[in-house]
Amino acid sequence: MNGKIILEKKQFSITLDRLCFELIEKHGDFSNTAIIGLQPRGIYLSRRIHARVAEILHSKKVLYGELDIAFYRDDFRRGNEQIVPNVMNINFAVQDKNIVIVDDVLYTGRTIRSALDALTDFGRPNKVELLVLVDRRYSRHLPIQPDYTGIEVDTRSNDKVKVEWKETTKQDLVHIITNNV
Image (tube, rainbow, N blue to C red; front, top):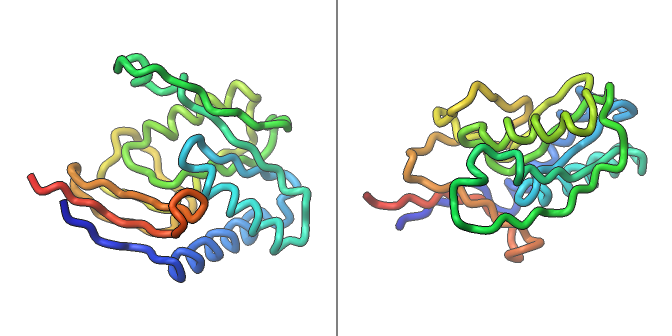
């Protein structure tokens, strides 16, 4: 296996700030917008985005939630592994709100499709947008594209994009791991 680092600590921080300012430019004071992170890996990015947006806006009123899509996935019954749901934390009505779904890596689009299904159980949003740290272009199974992208990478199907978070591995890092076939 070979690896290549595509985002390190400083670039990682700059990218997160850029994404936050793009959100603020589009959504203003976030009075009708909520940020929702996808369990399990999107929550690290969404928590940081939420905290930074609230800091920039000097506001504690930026709505935030976390969505578990485990039982909405189209492949959840395929394996023999037992699915343990994550905690859902959406304590506001999504009805008529602008929702920004946040995930770490966009690959086939199936996770986002599942998120859209799960989100509708909480109401009908006015608009739904997608923010991802890494967009693995040219690999979609569904016609889903991000509205906000940290970095775009072109990868092969045998590549794996791994995002490490200082909350879990003590460092912020994105790298591509290539399995030699």
